[in-house]
Length: 175
Image (cartoon, rainbow, N blue to C red; front, top):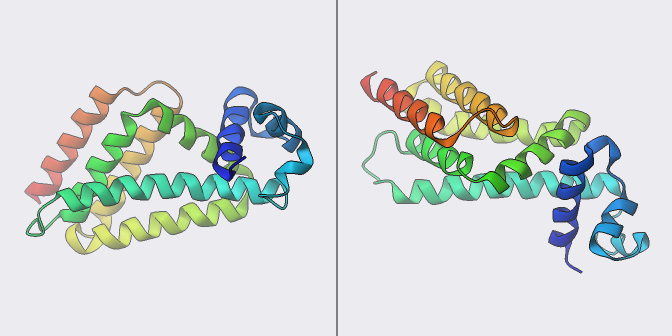
């Protein structure tokens, strides 16, 4: 049994039953182990939820970093373009959207998870603001947050996201 299997099971339970119904017993049942076996990897449910948060953040940041490396070093808006392209790539991945939705359920009820996402938000703004200014960086971030919310609710599709991101890039490039 690996930690990631338990995190994946937690994501499935949250998606199926909601975060309020998440229990170590349900996770154990999902992966076919005893509840005490979970404690080999996690000290408690809170520890597992933070692992889920860090996993989600890690996946998000990994994709942004991959997109950043694809962009020319001469691009004056390299961080901005990586942020937009990385988010679009993720908004096209229905499984990743489900992972983010599960993570957001944890975020709502967990101050430590909230702090982790606040740090991600500050880092992204810190990278984009020198390129386009704080207000435009906030605009991009809020627009993408809205797209993520729509994707998690099943009302936002990849074509619309791509069109909006292309329009945002056009606005940012003109300024």
